[in-house]
Image 1 (cartoon, helix red, strand yellow):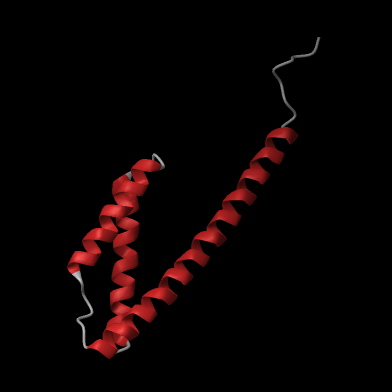
Image 2 (image 1 turned 120 degrees about the horizontal axis):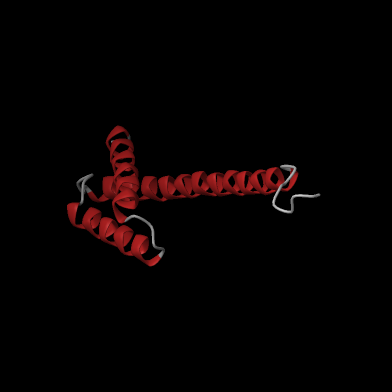
Amino acid sequence: MVDENATDGRSEDVSLDALREEIESIDREIVELIAQRTYVAESIAGVKRERGLATTDEAQEEQVMERAGENAERFDVDSNLVKAVFRLLIELNKVEQRESR
């Protein structure tokens, strides 16, 4: 008698491996996007330096956080988590802007 519900584990391993590969690919894309965002933020820092503007722009930061929350809701992701990630990105950019002055 064969148990139709029993698996030998191979098909589950293949699915798990494929999913892990997909996560790895997504992680690379996230890092690439962070690098792109950082490059653009460095360009913004250069413009701010040239114009004698302050490093911090609270109104702009608020807009970024609002957009992050809206995008989180649109993709059904926890907005607090997304906002925390964006807060880190903003802080990273501010530190780099200060160091480049």
